[in-house]
Structures are given as structure tokens and as C-alpha cells.
Amino acid sequence: MSKSKRGFLIALSGPSGSGKGTIVKSLLSQRDDMVLSVSMTTRAPRPGEVDGVHYHFVTRELFEETIRQDGFLEYAEYNGNYYGTPSAPINQWLAEGKTVILEIEVQGAEKVMDHRSDLVSIFITSPSVEELERRLRGRGTETEEVIRKRMKTAQYELSRAFRYQYVVLNDEVELATARINTIVDAESMRYSRMENTILEVLKDVSTQ
Amino acid sequence: MSKSKRGFLIALSGPSGSGKGTIVKSLLSQRDDMVLSVSMTTRAPRPGEVDGVHYHFVTRELFEETIRQDGFLEYAEYNGNYYGTPSAPINQWLAEGKTVILEIEVQGAEKVMDHRSDLVSIFITSPSVEELERRLRGRGTETEEVIRKRMKTAQYELSRAFRYQYVVLNDEVELATARINTIVDAESMRYSRMENTILEVLKDVSTQ
Image: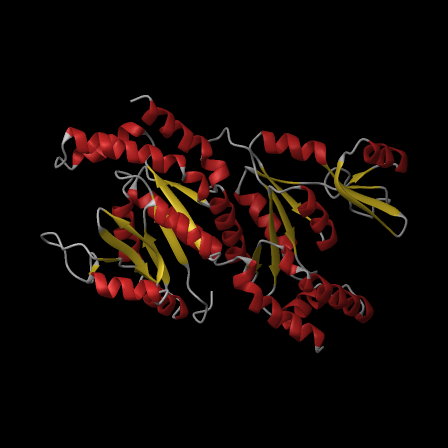
């Protein structure tokens, strides 16, 4: 409740087509205490991608130097390119009391879970597989093969949902956004976050 | 979200003067899916106390028979009288999808925590010790000695708040009630409660 409190680290995962990108946009537009972590990568920017917005595009040398300095919450190599979540801005935001969102795939999220006990992990799912596929096709930009591959990945991701603390149904973006806000509000009432309030009252009782 | 889901068991504790009784009344008046567990006791009813409302007033024989049948979530003996939380109605309500509230002192709540991993435990506190004392005095019915004794008990109870999952500040009854509703809503999105949704989607992906 107090402004001086440490922020939250939230991992949001969900299959392609679960609508997590839209939910993140909706959250960020509603709450100015929320920020989105931007990943670092060594791959080249695609047309339209902006450095510092979609990714921090860096050299292999800088990425590997950051690994050596233990500067990632998690990182991985895919198809010869590195992808990672830099710790420094996240720690800074948390200290400022911000809620930091990691929009992260399942394997990355599981690595963060293993190291950050303060992580609030949320898995987003569409209400049905038809809806998932409809959203994938809705983009109208993907081949049948790509869609089948994404469905396979979705199957794997859904099978790992049990690792997450919360599951949020994305039947409507507004509802899903409200649900995440509810989770954040409840998490702010965890004993560990309210301990100072208790200790204040306790101190006063003791000195009466 | 589904009506067929198992209900919640909530332990609400807090020092005398924290206003938990008022909050419970407010919750029960707002939500018809919430019920209040009624304790069983062998002590005699006080003037105005109604059997089945304030307590189930029973004989020592019946109470001890219920102990033998493992029929209490927790029980204790104070000043020669038994007090206990009967399991049977609680299990029935949970199966019906109700949210069951235990308004329970700290020692009883800790016993329930040790046996029920599904318990949602909430500690209610007033914002300051002055407020706590003001509320105790506000009743205008207690002697100085009783008030001092209650403050001692409050001190003990506050020192056990760390055993609870959540701490709810009761600065205003309406706000505190809303906070508890937020906790219940967030808890309903726990993976364990959403597993069926995930399994449904997963089953459909697998059969595509």
C-alpha cells in the first residue's frame, strides 16, 4: 500500500495465440507503476523492430561479457543467437517500487523461478484450443506449417503450466487484465510485504 | 470460475479490536457463497447467545465423542470448557463450492494450518495500536484490567502474524472487506484450481 515498498517481478507466459501481448499492452496503458522488461539479443533487428523497445540489440561480445558478469536473470541460445533478460534494469525498477513484467516463454520463466523466490508467475491461456488456433490464423500471416509448429509448441507450454502459481483465462482482454491486477493486489497483501505494518503496531503495543 | 469448483477454507484472525467481527458480517452480507463456521462448545450459553448461531452448545459427552471420531479441525480446552471447530459441516460446504470462514484465534488457526494445506490464512490488523485501543474502549463495556489483558493478548497475536499468508489492514471496514474479496478472487486463479481448464485445452490440442 505504501509507495516506498519494493516492486513485484511478474512472469507472464502463455502459448502463442493466448493473447498475452495484448494483455501486456492493456496493463501498461492502465498502470503507470508497471514496466515491461526488454530482452537483450544478438540477432539482427527485423524490419520495424526498434532497439530498446522490442529488444536491446547488442553484439555477441557485449552479450558474453554480460553473461560473465552474471548480468542475466536467464538467457539461452537459439539458432545461433543469444536471448536474455538483463538483471540491472529490473533490480533498479523493483527498488523504485515498480511492477516489472517479464513477457517470457516457458523455459525462460522456469529458469527465473529457480532463482527468484519473489517471482509471481502467471500462465495465460485462451479458453479453448479452437480459440487459440483462431487467433493464430487470425493474423493471416502464417503458413499451415508454421501454425502446426506453433500448436505443437502450445501443447508443450500448456503441459508446463503446473509450474506457475496462477492461471489466467483470457476469454476477454479486459477481464484477463483485471484478473492480473487482482493477483497483483492480493500479492501486495502477502505477510512478507505487510510485515512492516505489523511490526509498527507491535512496537507501539510493546511500549504502552 | 466454474460453479462446480471446490470452495475455499479461510481462517480470519486478528486481535480483539481489529474489527474482524464487523468485517465477517460485511462479507457475509455481500456474498451468498460465503458461510461462517460455528464453533462447538461445552460452556453454558450467555444471555442473548443463540444455539447454532453463536455456538453449538453441546454436552461434554457429545464433544468428547466427536473428538474420538476425529470430528474437529481443531479444538482446545479453556477454563474447563471445550471449544472446537467441527469438520463435518465445513467439508460439506466446501464440496458445495462455498467459501467457509473460520473466525478463529491465533492458536486455533495455527493448528488448522498444520493440517490443511488448502487453508487461506488472513491476519487482520488495525492500522495502529491507538486505533486498536480506541476500538476496545469504544465498546465502553470493559474495565481497565480487561483492556490491559486484551492488549497483552493482542501483542501475542501480532507476534504470530508471520504464520499467516496474508495481512489485511482494517483502516475502513469497506476497504478491508474488498481486500479479502480480492484475496479470494486471486486464490481462485491458483494453478491447482485452474488445472481443469488447462487440461481441457491440452486435451483438445493433443487430439488435433
